[in-house]
Amino acid sequence: MSQRLHNRFIVVSYLFYIAIFGAATGLFLWLRDIRIYMRTGLAGYRGAARMGVLHTAITTAGAGEILLFPSVDILGIGIVLLGLWLQGQQKREQVFSTEPVLDRALGKAPAKR
Image (cartoon, rainbow, N blue to C red):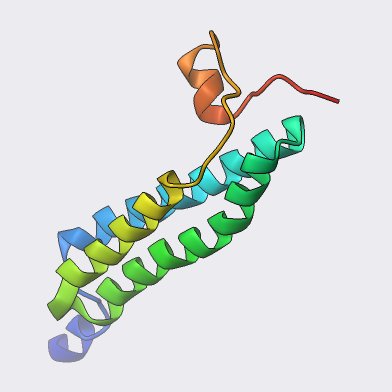
């Protein structure tokens, strides 16, 4: 009976939790780009928000790869890092000047209507 009980739990590597954090970061950055685009209407943030869908999918796929194939968890971390790196490669206009760090992180750009 104890054998069946242990089969219900999934044993994952500590790298899975790091990959989940990376996927959540990619999602956060994508939502931040969407918020800045909705407030400012700048074309650079529009492109970043559109490509953020792909980048978030890449980071989520990397985390899923670690869950499904734990023997190659380094590959999954590499996929997550690739998605995060691609997220940062988008060209965006400078929106912030003297705002506090928390406002920048949350995407509280000055609204231009």
